[in-house]
Length: 418
Image (tube, rainbow, N blue to C red; front, side, top):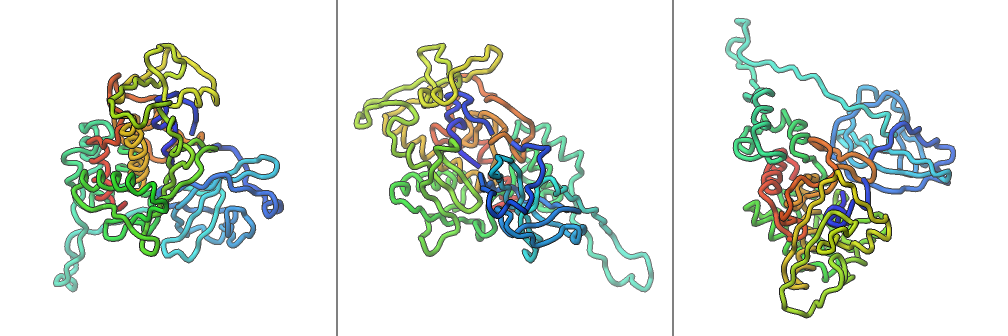
């Protein structure tokens, strides 16, 4: 999951897009050894699947068939990652890395061969009726809220915000209706196993330049959640790696991939990004007016990184679209620090199980519910622009957590995602 330039820089424009292409055929193993190229690997929420045909491969390059799925019709696999591959003929296909619960059977399967599996639950409650067993109580299941009652509570809550009583249900409620919570609040189990131990993740920051920014992001989440969720770790003792990477080709400023976070090296070291040239040594407060419209129709409002974005995509203006304008204020150094702290805070939000929202005020904001052409995995609905009114302060721009961000993170704790 990525903090793309257009997640916050769509304050610039809809420059990049995010999808699952369907109707594609699996790549044949005959030419896989020589021609398969892994284009992208994306962490996905763990969901149960079954398959009745096709093969499981040992690697994303499909070098070796290790299982015939016809022999595993009644085996439940759990998704971990989705891989995009390309052949020498520029044929695109999607494979999912799955594993059984005990981890003994694992590998890469053509995504369209996997079908979501919903096991039938049979619950027996109460005492046995036969006299011979009358002295032995039967184990009962905890009382669970009805689905209709839960849906009514969700409907009454603020959009995408599990506020109030939704954070005070029983553990049985959360485990029973996990998929309903995932769908209605855009959350999922995105961190790899072992990232969180005893509800904490220890972060090793590979570059000393990033440490002050990471510490501020850690402090924001810990203070908001009222507990120590993230700590700084060491090279020898950590569960989450944070380092510089290259996001230029895919258009991200930050990216989370299950057990690591990367921050784009070039843009981090570019003092003109994302607001343009500013006197960084100045202590004078400046205000910059921003817009999600990249056409520069209003000369008083500019898009972030607008010149570089328009070079890639060309300017455009859709009269029917909702364009958001806002202002950021601070010293030049404060504005740049807030931006990169916001990027890292956003990526740590993904580690906590938070996917994007259409609210600009959220740290987890995104201008669209699609990424790389595919729909967001857990989304209550699709969106193509922000839902806020003009003047709203951007959570990612100011490195500020909204109450919706905080409530969703509290929910993912109750769902067992961290």
